[in-house]
Image (cartoon, one colour):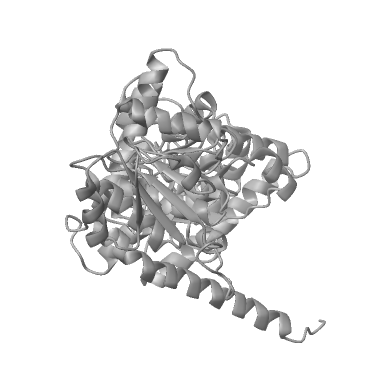
Length: 520
């Protein structure tokens, strides 16, 4: 998992690093590496012409000035647009004095020249921003956005809230963001991806021990992490060693929810899937047998139900109903200390009613709740809109208060156990259909059955689920066309691709280790 940071953590890393590395050296590194990346971008894009570097009055502007100096020393045509020609920031003043005479200096009155540049470097606002942009600052951002030239932002797009992913009224829409040290969590949620564009992380010299000390709880989960967590299947494995999943889902009229969830569990590798419904109608069993003959079936009225499903990972809730029977299942699994439980859909609604009534919730720290914004609002109070506005804080607060793992579905999914928080780097609006979440809960249940650690099972399940939707669009399908059954049927091909990539990585690493080392 890729380590990421909040604004507070990023500032703390910068400040703590200065105990051993002078801030001027860190700034020189940031500016020099940024200049190198600007040149590489222009070469790759086949661009020549003036580079407009828009510098704010603080540290981010000073980074821009260092970048300008290095670009000018390489012989490029550079003009610096100064928001404040009389800034009182010490490092800014120092770097301004060091600019070579070949660099044109522009005042705010010459703002219109920005749009005529070939490339624009945004060094206007840094992490210290905390209020809406206005006045001349707003005019600078509007002028940059008005231009058709590619825009390269240093550390973050000016005006973007790097914690929440929303904007301070207005933000630069960057083509490329060169961030320093660590990616910021707001880059991945809400409006963040639209403003960040391509993201590249520049290692400017923060001591690794400082980074690990100050940013140890927040991560981004992508393909590399998915390949690492993906369960292995030994040649000697059998259906029992592959694990069992009990799916409590599908009351009369909603049996499809249980089938979708069970398909997700079995396709991801669960050795057994048992579907338990609230129906007393034997016709339901016949329907399941016709549609999914691989599944075993039980009814809530069956004797020794929980003995028959012991040692199974459990998925509770999809289309199961919001009555006392659902609570009975949760209480029984809690009493039996089953640590591998996914709580979804109707089961979340039941918990919300229990919480509202002031009753203790039957939850364990390893259980995984999978609410969307509306369900989380019912659980936690407040509005769905407010929870969506700060997805990281919402998931973290809910996990700590509920004492369980919370998988906050949406763009992008954020998962927290109260100590660790992870944003999932996959998924799109193609999943916005009833039944998609049922497949997700089944996938996670199937991973739990295979002994994947619960937090990692939640992350891997969400990544796989979203990645299928991403690959669906890449394959040329329309965003409106993905069905939940497609998610289940596309699982085998995706798992194969992830496993093949993992084996390729291992083979490459093995070849590297086998090569003779030549001492210089």
